[in-house]
Length: 227
Image (cartoon, rainbow, N blue to C red; front, side):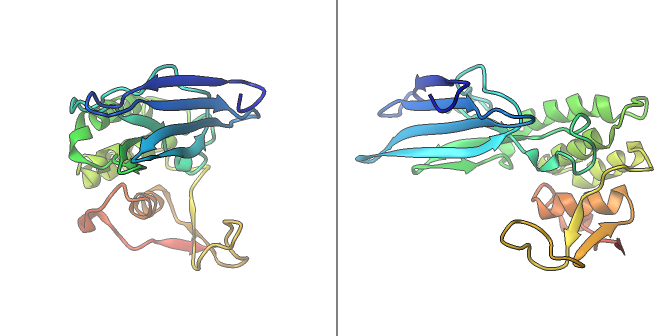
């Protein structure tokens, strides 16, 4: 047991050609909005390695990893909680998927690889229903996640344009950037935090800084208003 909530255990091969199965341990740390834990035990050469992933909002998974792209290798799917509270409250936030493969003894983020286009197409369609202007609940979190999915599909400019047109003009939540490097605790030194003037410049900066949009044509210099 990892904690008082217990742990789910999965055992199996990620690919038919794997010489040995892996063991996956998923648990729940307890507390509000936290945390689903993940650890994989895998044979790497003559050694056995413990490969943890960062905890995510929510509980444990309900199935062994699935092959998401049809290549015969099971993919580990988690979520990017960096979007939580960036553009909406916790209830209004959406966390895009993060996909990992086991490669050379490490869990590698492969989310941006073109073979996962179907995953991103489905996700974009799902979240856009909540980004649509007909949704009166705070929708900017869904709009940001939609633009992220479109960025993964190589359609970042289109995604940002649609998200901006659909977003609520008065945003209760926006990310901030820091003029200097964050301190050891991950905070921005006093007086160095910069606020954005609106949803679009904040979204452009956020997607660029987190790697969802890598097309220079859709990047724009931040247009912040000093705090």
